[in-house]
Length: 391
Image (cartoon, rainbow, N blue to C red; front, side, top):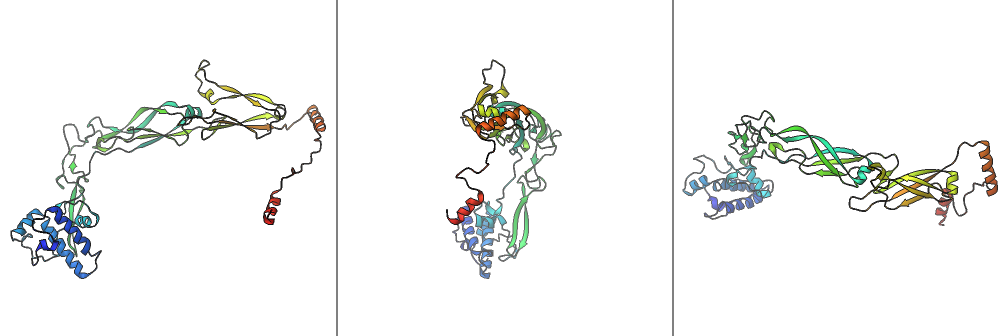
């Protein structure tokens, strides 16, 4: 060669592999054709790559230091048969950790990997969601194969190194280009990148190290959950390939509709309907509590009902807020119970009932109600007109 390779890379003859690789990366970033389109830079890049190919290989470097031809007498000038690895170019731009001589691939991928998480949905009653419940679930997931214990090989056998890639999990593919011969590493097709082959797969799991099985789990649903809440059961999901650690199991809660109460956050809402006369005169009602749905007997000490006072003159739509009678929160505290009153107007009256109502209307001066808007209130169009007039 007409030029000293150490001078091309700008290193001395005692430079170690790290210094040589660092010099090559610096020069590759400077002269690579994708960065520097100058034809002279292209030639310079070929020379730098050729020098790196020799000095990064211990055998070729030793031959060069002895004054011999590191390419075995080939006629190549720079760019002729340059066998540098494509990973070295990637290292130059992205700082990878390719090994000396361009062999720094990813290596074999492990057979043992973590399993996937699993998700199941569980419907619970409103009271169960509010106060918590313990349920037994039947789940169908991948579990460890008890025949091979996750190894994947039949009893008495074991995985052996792949002869194609020699246990590396990768094979080199060489392609010629204007830069010379570019070598790339691809997963080995024979062993699918594992680096080992199972000559006698386990008949029970077909070499996967796991089988599907139905099992029963006990899950404790905490008080205060709502629709969409997920309860995590660590390491109860799918066992991983090769008998790897199991993923997690998530139980997603779906709260069923309740015949009396509806839930808004931690508050409960319900509506009671009272006759017109009861709303006018006032009355007392007995309502069930949410605890009534989980009562364990008369001696449980749980309050299953309470008295609700309807004051005289209550209007339809009136709300009463009962503090602390809602749903317990996941982080403590408890919501409220909001009771809405709906006043029911009778639709069918017999003669005597109609007579009494007319007499009441006469006494109250309501025989011919005006139906006019109350003073101070305005129609929609009146408010719109005032807006344009600046009032």
